[in-house]
Length: 266
Ligand SMILES: Nc1nc2c(ncn2[C@@H]2O[C@H](COP(=O)(O)OP(=O)(O)OP(=O)(O)O)[C@@H](O)[C@H]2O)c(=O)[nH]1
Image 1 (spheres, helix red, strand yellow):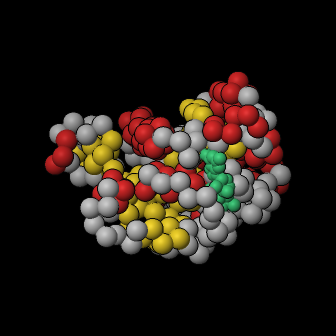
Image 2 (image 1 turned 30 degrees about the vertical axis):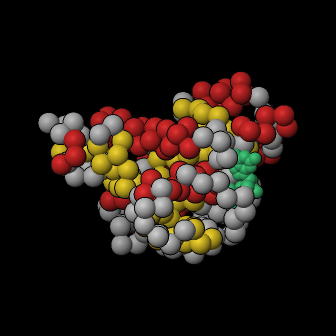
Image 3 (image 1 turned 45 degrees about the vertical axis):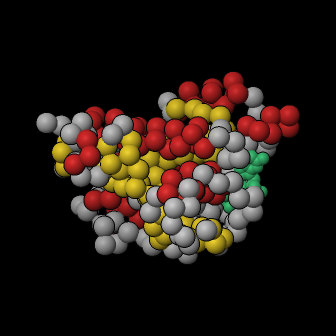
């Protein structure tokens, strides 16, 4: 039987151990990373977030009848990729978000995709990345065509979706679940590859920092040379918030109080 993370794979359904998936959301400020994350977790659209908070959330999902323990890191890089090791070393897959009404955010997403491609090359394994064109509801202010988004995604071999954090939940959920499926496909190709358990010494530092070759501010990969699980860089200002069940929350079955991006959500 094929296995995922050393555990029996789905198909056996409800009784199989959950697949653990870490997902990092990347993109320029204002692209809608927090709005999409909160929409996925709570089905709600909240219009303002603290841009400096970087949170990691945890949610129990079921994807194709398989239980999945999904952790979502809503990153908060200032303008360009910064101290990227914290998510590069942690995530199994990445959602790169830009806003269709902002060309700069589209250009920013290209930098993130280049960074991820380089990371995959350095690590000699694939890291699924999905390109998300957010704010589809703002189509009248569109600065980036769908064709441009699709072409960029195609260049980096990633899936592409146009979404909106303030339109239907199902589409946003579909995108997050697609990321899980991509991780599963990648594991089927190379089941032993797990970014969380890099423990052996790796001679990457001689290749020089990512910045030097790529022009990405403060973003170096040379710390990977000695990284181990214990040494994983802490998520800056992260609070781990467990969202028991987004569906239960939205139906308000229980008076759940959760802190999301500094907001209290009942
Ligand atoms: N109309 C519309 N507005 C959105 C959408 N997604 C996010 N916004 C708005 O865009 C602004 C930025 O959204 P955030 O979710 O904070 O963006 P972010 O990428 O997390 O930005 P930082 O936290 O600064 O990194 C907020 O005012 C949101 O309300 C969307 O799909 N449609």
